[in-house]
Image (cartoon, rainbow, N blue to C red; front, side, top):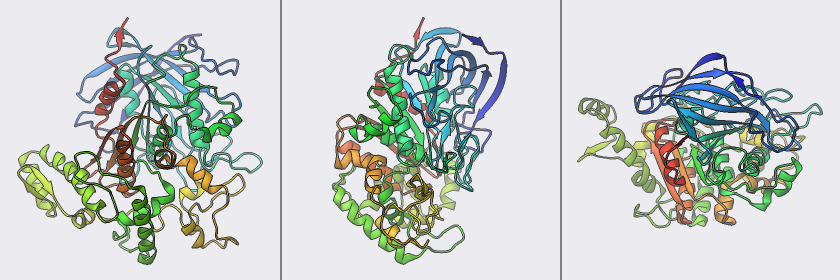
Length: 543
């Protein structure tokens, strides 16, 4: 049954600005969304009901400052597996534009944006959404986030971020709104995450639950080809922070048999889970090597308190990164002038390929007086002939305090969110690196990683599917973004991902936002345009 929306609400999306008011290239982005009743699959099957939608209206102001009135059909909280562990999380929303600026459109062959709201490897749910972009991160019914972790929706602002992320980095709904206004279909899947606990006291959202659920969501969409509007062969994932990590993992691991048993257990549809393209913002991934990469990058930077981390540990981990990087045998991006990337030349590579171009773009866009003021405050930059240059040491000093202590991800005291992500059904937090386990400070009787950890790491790391077992069914198009001031992770992590994808022959669009922190998304309009370009989509057809 169809329900006409009768109530209205206002939503303001922050981008690159303070929470609540936003700028996309200096233009505010607003959405006025109507709310109404939602529908679910009535028989519990994996068949999408094309008639069980609510019709909603929204007004989206694009990055050029133009308002668009969008009418769309909204399907709420459809369970995407036949044997859900918890349907609160294992469900998805679908939004399909039917009228834009008063003209009826046909989105039957439009790209599908698969936008997750994962942050911090926490659970995410669409159950309370009242329209497009309404997915949230948190514990939800029957479960809960780890003690002290945020459980609010994605509208909460993270300290030091840019107003467009929640407290652990999960993206807000900017991409979804702009995609809808461009005529794309938007699918928003929920997923289990760390910290969820059932009535028996067992944890059911630890690795690899999040990626298994997202794969199951893709399978549901593809199994319903012809029922769900949109081109199921042109699915583009999007996510930020841990959501960016699982977005890249989804793209790298398409149709990998490693996940088959896990998918079978939850009753995933018998369909492909390969996707066409990946959008990832500040992806925190390659976790078994993330500690070393972090120390190589930020090891000499003090914490916000001014205190230095244990430099012995930092140097140990930095050495481990050097060994890992050498084994990867990655080459710099085409045109960079760099051959094999090693710990010795990676600072120069990051400067020339990413940091200096980023600063140059930023400074070139300023007025002469604003540029002069900025350069006077940031004397580490040399500005000559319209180009910014500086040293790696100068860059590190400019960024300032590192966010995380050492080790950043596999904490000796098991306090990191990633320790929780690799917990088991009966153990909340576990070590996942040999170094972390060896230096455990919690009194564990065995200082070794448990036997199932190596397989879990393979299931959770996109680099496994791009390097060790090169996956021919991977995505071939990659949009990767990171803020230059982001100390939640190492700049090497996304640069390695980009280098490997391009070395394999994939199309890569990777850049860093100057002076932006964790979760930045300052060019969302460009992402929407990029989707049209790589998918070959022209424009929403008029009916």
